[in-house]
Amino acid sequence: MAPTLQTVVRRASLGLRVLAGERYLDRQVRWVAVSELEDPTPFLEGGELVLTTGMRMTADAAAPYVARLAEGGAAGLGFGVGIGHDEVPGALVEAASAADFPLVEVPRQTAFIAVGKVVSELLAAEQYDEISRAFAAQGRLTRAALRPEGTRAVVDRLAREIAGWAALLDEGGQIVHATAGARAEALADELARLRAPGAPASLALSTPAEHVVVHPLGGARRIRGLFAVGRSSPFTPVAHTIVNAAASLLTLALEQGQRHLAAERRVRTAVLDLLLAGRPEAAAGVLERLGECPPTGQIAVVAAAGDTAAVLDAVEPSVFAAEYGDQVVVLVPWQEGERVAETLGRLGPVGVGCASDAASSAAGLDQARRALAAARRGPARVVRFAELAGQGVLSLLDPEAASGFASALLAPLADYGSRADLITSLRAYLAENGHWDAAAQRLGVHRHTLRYRMRRVAELLGRDLDDPATRAELWIALSVPSS
Picture 1 (cartoon, rainbow, N blue to C red):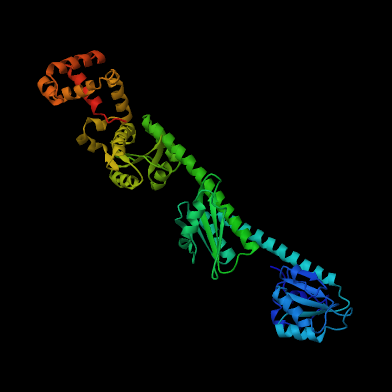
Picture 2: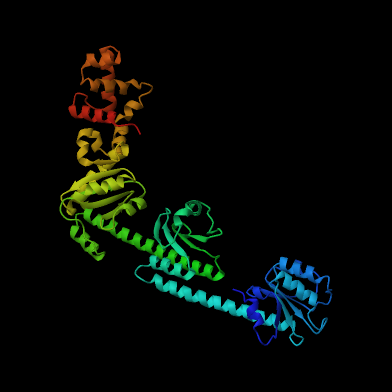
């Protein structure tokens, strides 16, 4: 914050005397400008203490001169006596008093450059003080980040540092932690803008009653969260520095947390591999180092598809979950399986299997994956392996493997010139359990035509159509949905 006119006037070494505008000595002096122009305002930015000796000033020009300075945003006027005027002209004092514009007398022995040096020193001192306060605040924020509460402690500390409120939100815009008075919910549109592709680095919003800054948190590849702060007064450079420091600390904490979480997830995948390999003792030993243990007794094995990160985030920390290819596998005590399956079913298809214990996870996972394949075909989002018994033998088959089997088995018939009726004829023949008349009637052909076609089918496939096993395989191949 720049020094005020009051601070400058109080410097005894300058010998300044206030002649008008005493009520407005709290104005900030951002610089000193020396000018003998009748209108120096085109060369001012606002906040300057204008110094003049009044060489060209007449009594009639005093009032317009003061009016122009006031309108131009000058902090005040310093009039040097002893050169052009032995004393400050009365007309100028009257004009300044009428406009309530600060006017100070600069004695002959005080060089204008001395006033400029004092203002410069005061500005430098203020800047140093601001930097010192910013560094001190950063230290307090860093100590807060080292506390067990981590990010929450940083948010609380920051709210106190800026005398306002602060809120930490997840990448979806939901509040993770907020201090009293936080209005993060009202920023929904702005938060959505920061999550969109090509979003700005940050947002600043201002109303007459409140000023808000919003930062995205995370690395260049992905936003990990959002961070909003607000206060009733505008953010000073020091406040911006403190906010940026807090954003950096929160980003670092989130990124480190993500790396730690990724490492834990890789460990759980390794544990699952050990369980599937029939090594429950080794798996339990690894989990013990994480302060966990595999579920005991009869367990539910849940296989869930969908966004892996979202599924893992939806699983409670106390539940064992691991990535397995493009799926998430969850092992829980049997009585908790239904609840977990229904929760994950809101995110994507889920299959549920059963294992007698953790050592039998491989068998339970096989059941869960078969059920998941059925769930992917729909319409149910959650399918239990026990329910597949009423859905036919095809529900027990891996869809990709079954499709490959069907394509390979029936390829000679599909490739047989333009005679696509071989597959249609075979389907009718099998549907009528080999009864020639019934099958021929279904097709609308003579039974001798059908006999000829079936002999051709047997030749192309190299199979005996009277063999029940061959008929079963062909019927399954014809029943597999085309991909």
